[in-house]
Every structure is written in C-alpha cells, then in structure tokens.
Image (cartoon, rainbow, N blue to C red):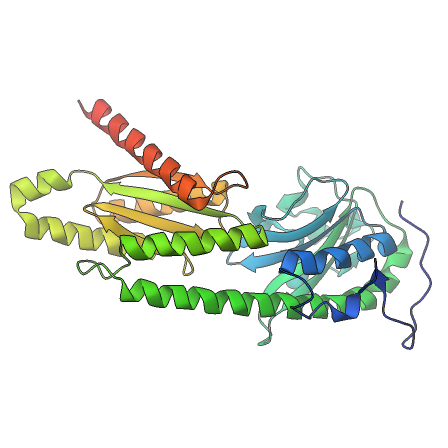
Length: 341
C-alpha cells in the first residue's frame, strides 16, 4: 500500500481548504476563471495532495461516452479531451451502486475488478463520486485511481470528497447550461438558414456553427470531429430517372444521416449531394464509430455514399479538419470508382 499518512481531520469551523490561495469552497463562482478546466484544476491538485491517489479526473457522461474534462495525473497519462466508453468504466459501476465509492483495494470489489477499463490499466485503488445536475440527472463523475492499493484511512475522506463533488457538479452543470444556451442559439440560426429541399442547415449556417464550435473547443479543451459525406450515383439517378427522383434521394439521405447522429451533433447540406456532420465532443475513435452508423443508416435506405472524417486537434482547427475530411471523402470516392471498373 502507498500514499501519504492520514491528514488531520477537518472540523466544521476550520477554514476552507485551499491550494495556492484558491478557496475550494468558492469554485462554483464562474467568474473566478475563464473556463471549467481552469476552475477545477486546483481542486484536483488539492485532493491529490491530501489523499495521495496518483490520478484525479472530472469526467462528463455523454450518452455512453466518458469524456474527461480535466485531469491531474501522475501515472496514467490521462488528459482532458480523451473519451472512453462509459459502460466500460469504473464510474459507471460506482454510479449503479455495484461497488463502494471508496475502494482502497480494487481487487476486493468484484464489480470493479471485472470492469473492461482495468483489463489493460493497472488500478490498485479507486475512488469515485457521481456528479448530478440540478434535476438530479447524472452528468459525470469525480474520481481517482492509484496503481497500487491504498491505506484504509482513505475511506474516512469520503465525506470531504463528496462535499467537494457537490461544488464541482454545480460548477459543471452551470457551464453545461451556458454551453447549451449557446448551442440553442446556434441551432436557431441553423433553422433560420435551412436548405429548402431537406430542411436541414445550409452551407452558410454550417460555416458559422463550425467557427463557433471551434472557439468552444479551444476554450474548454474538448474534442470535435467533422464528417464529409457525398452520395454516390446521384448523377446517374438524375440522368436515368429524372431530377425529382434524385431530389427524393437527397431528402432520404438527409433523414438517414440525421437519424444516425447523436442529438447534439449538427447535420447540414452543403450543396448538391454533399453533406457535413459536426460531431460535438467526439474524438477520432468515436468519429469512426459514428461514420459506420451513418453508412449503415444510408445503406438501409439503399443509398451508397463516400465518407471522410477528421478530428480537431490543438494544431488543427475545425475548418482545417473539414478540409482534411473532404479530401478523405474524395479519396474514398476515387477508390470506389477504381474498384467498380
């Protein structure tokens, strides 16, 4: 077992714990920092110094995705923006009540020991607390891992961690509410700038939303991907069967794509038979899964399409990623033509 000696007990009338002069009980003040990551980072540093777990993270649950928003990590190399499957995580089992919130010996908790996440990751000890929104819905988790088992005294720190998690959860919920209001405004613009044939956003709205989301990614350190989709064989359909049949194919494609994406993703028709998808909080592996879902949805409606994708990075904006995705789509289309000869 490793970790520091048990810290002194905090009493109700003790001053609030702080790191580098930051009052941890005031972290819900959104004006103290520019974004959520900056807000929560001193909190994770404090918890690491007090409890000794090597890795502390705050993650958001987004459907079945486990999106790391902030990390203070000395052992695993985890960082903000990484995405895992929520159902594979230790936090998913903790939130379901399948194991204790503090497990100094992970191996002694069967539900944790069997979690897919730990198959290739050495975790000797785990601590996790769910984060809830104002309506009580599960929005994420505050958690810690350590490569080896921890001393049993860490169980006594559960109350402190849960108190801090309430502040972190309130802060996260407030940031998510602000972000959602921004996205609703963007969608209102998207609806006002719709493609008349399909009813989804047009190129003008697409370019505006891409720019707004890129700024948000840079500010919060969150991932996003773009997919370029071009229907195969539309010209042949127009030539053989007429433009009305081709227009119906475009409408059906818009519906198939929209059904395959997640509720918070953006779909737009960019002209002719070309579509774009902005996959929000979506890294490269999640984007590949999304592309497969879109391809299956189109195929189920007997529509074939070439798809290219790219992911935003610190060195590549979403606009640059879109250019890369478009090139990948044309490469896929050329390959299809070559193989069909």
